[in-house]
Image (tube, rainbow, N blue to C red):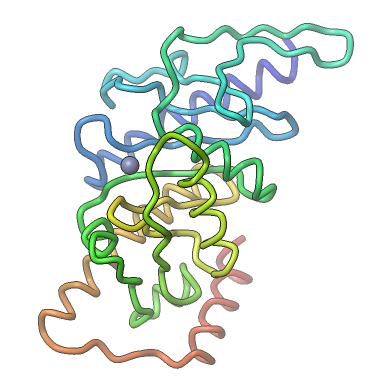
Length: 234
Ligand SMILES: [Zn+2]
């Protein structure tokens, strides 16, 4: 069996399984949320099919696309043509945004999008989540930023995500009036960032109901972030 076939099978299984984390942590309703992963060493990614409910997902239903979001079912590697097939379902309607991130951020191996309630409530107000928790210093290295208002149909969501994340330590961006997109070195890290983003969005919101949360100064945030990324991040 070719190495590429093995890799695609492994990533399809991983991406499929990670969708159950989105439901477990209550980050999604209906079919509105998706995980994707890059196929390392190839111009390919794996993403959820559009419109399939989470409990019906299987590894074989995960769609393999190129880095422009077009489904691909075979590739030529050296002298060999490797065929893995595709389910015949369209990829998630957010595929163009995921693909844009992979094309423009070569270190990113996984992307997640949800409309999780608290994070999306901040996005609806276009307000960044201030860094007022040590766990935010650890995971996000500062504020969770807001990206521009953008509609599906061209590269504007992808561009908004990439431009905002490049200017930040954060692996999460709240796209204005829309919801969070998160990135990671692999799909699992991107899912973790989505879970943590919702958690801190909720905690900071609750804190706000009681008064004004205390800021953490920049030097302390920097040291939390460095320590966590270098010691625990590995
Ligand atoms: Zn969305």
